[in-house]
Image (tube, rainbow, N blue to C red; front, side, top):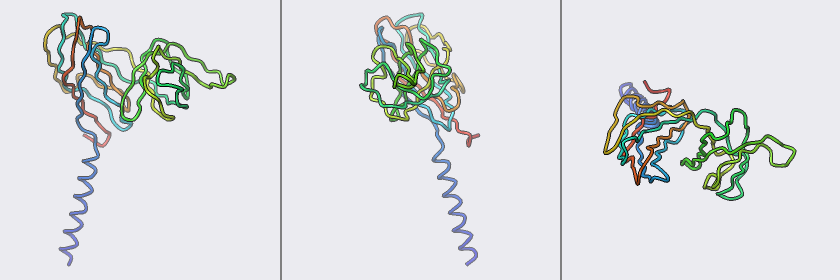
Length: 208
């Protein structure tokens, strides 16, 4: 009887261990294609309990001055009201502290990132609009939801890759801020360019 209990206990421990291991974020891959007007932009959504570490980038460029541009989220905000339309440039957010005009910002909505640029912002609760951020033309491009995460992106880190097909591999090509998204842009493009594959590891505090 004791042996049976020990066996069942062992199975329970293994099940818990496997469950925890399975819940840990691991590798994620994505891709992107682009044009001269809108170069390739690969996006990794934020996980509040993980840090994104880019480990592999394959890229195809048609210009010898092409470079990979890496950014990560710095300031974190959230949407406090649904925008009037997906193209609305004025959006209500919880705070304007730390916002910088012309900075890139992203909205994380239903597991996807939507990129825009700050045109201006205000903090005037007397006008009935509360705290607003005014985005570039086109707004978020999606109907937001109250509570959607918003991140102001960092300054850009560059990696020159030149023309033709290239691959970059490493243990940490770029490491984002903890709990923040990462954007990878391949620019410029004369006609078209592509990031056929980019891989990142989501490192959680529970991993070694």
